[in-house]
Amino acid sequence: MLIMLVLAAAFIAGVGFWKYRIVRKAMAEGAKFGPPPAAVTTVTVKPQTWQPVLRAVGSLKAVNGVTVSTDLAGIVSDIAFESGKAVTKGDLLVKLDTQQEEAQLRSAAARLGLAKTDLERKRDLIAKKAIAQSDWDTAESQVAQMKASVEEMKALVARKRLTAPFDGLVGIRQISKGQYVNPGAVIVALQSLDPIFVEFSLPQQHFASIATGRKVRLAVNGLDAGKFDGEITAIDSLVDPNTRNILVQATVKNAEHFLRPGMFADVEVLLPESSGVLAIPSSAIAYAPYGDSVFVVREKKGPDGKPSKIVEQQIVQLGPTRGDQVSVSSGLKDGDEVVSAGVFKLRPGAPVRVDNSVQPGNEAKPNPPNS
Image 1 (spheres, helix red, strand yellow):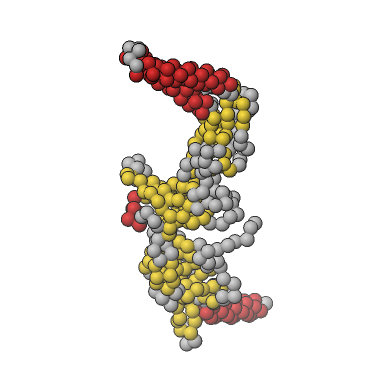
Image 2 (cartoon, one colour; image 1 turned 45 degrees about the vertical axis):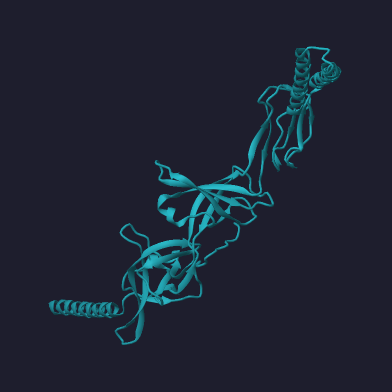
């Protein structure tokens, strides 16, 4: 019985040792081959020609814009415009009742006529020295006073006729026919829309890059009219001491009147083109506080002597962006193969398998479909 127990224990120990040797061998074999290569997509870095831009948010303003109001009190007798319609310089907008002023004008004109008649009669008398010089002077003075009264009444009547000071688009009228208005009452807003101003601010470090005549391009969120072209026409004479920004004004064509004063716009100031710019997709960049980096694919011989691909992490200095692309000012060279998707699962020295059947966005002017 004892012998059988000893034999059984020896058999179990032998089997356990054999299993241990098999497991150790499998672990050693696995360590040779390592993890399977990760599937990634890549792009080859090539020099490009770029149109650098300065971006800002601007506010649209009318070249000419006023709130039409009256400086006299009166009753609105006529409204000669339609809300939201175009008007031409000199067009009648609103007329206030002038019956009383016109009656006073006729009275002044009659007194002027009488004064002129009296003056003509005295002209013959003064020639014959039949009246004193003072009587002639008084008659001349009466004519001059009556002329001034007539001109005053004409001006008063004209001031009750409000006309458009320039070509533009009127807003919604704020008065009604028959309404009594006080001096300063708002009648309607009038805006000149073509061309139109856009004003925006840029940091002072960009001051050397801006100049009058430089082209700008703007887009307004919610408008399907595309982008609008213009040029810088004025730069403020001082930098804001609080923000260290400088105010810039550009003039933009607006023939279709899509742009309206008060709108916000995304503005791009177009700088001179740069050639030889290295750019990569933004998806290729691993952003980090200690430095942004990319993974560059390198060739390496495996344990069996066959070539394989691994990745090396490369710190890069980034520049301006354009659509899906980011320019790289240092860290890469022409011809480098950079991982463009799958960066999150990589580590330095990791084996990779390149599969470029599907590529991430890498467009200078992406046009994503509406969601």
